[in-house]
Length: 316
Image (tube, rainbow, N blue to C red; front, side, top):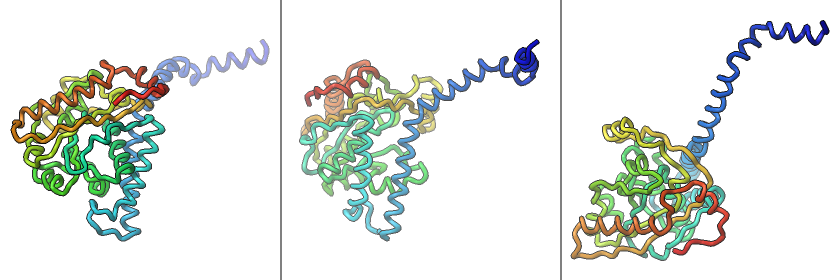
């Protein structure tokens, strides 16, 4: 028997080798599964990391400059510009982001109503580019759970995120601000899908505020937002869990560099003769029209990726 044969014989008898041979298949499966999970969630986690990093940079700016002014004042504009520039660069690189229809925004106050993706990073892109192009701050109505997230207080204040009570919205509009809201909110983020179904339920507060403030409503939609980030298929347990707690327990996944285009539609002017219910339906029709015009339904990740290389820009 040669030395090589002896060595092979000894290795075959080695307990560790037998163990590895027995469980190698399982180890490979576990490794591939963990790698897939990491790929699915790495971009959403990266976005979350950047959001917290942004808040840390604002805290540093506040302490170094001893800034004590109102977070919505112009004193914070240099910090806002830095933040907006970072997110705009990210939007250009990762999603080839485009913004169309800015000319439809009123010079004065108005309410922007938009479709809520699994992760509203497209809305963050919109806020950033709007500030860079127009140096204009759009105040945002967010779900109450956002304000329970630790360590984001200053970022929410500086970027104008608010719980959105009727009084807060009316005050913001009275002061000349744009105010944005997604009537579908977290429910739409969690349970809508590549069919891009609006899930507004009986939400009509935004319409009543628009009538009370006598301001227009402007519809807005981002193409392929569901192809970039998705939620797992709805399960009755998670739906019941959300309805009872109002907390989003289902994690988003994805983060593929699909093409994002945000379209701002023509404003719905104030009409004193329209009812709240009629205005809600009119707004829903306007948002749905943007979806029908600019979105392939059902959504296709493959087509959304190919649009990154399509030089022909869709018409507004």
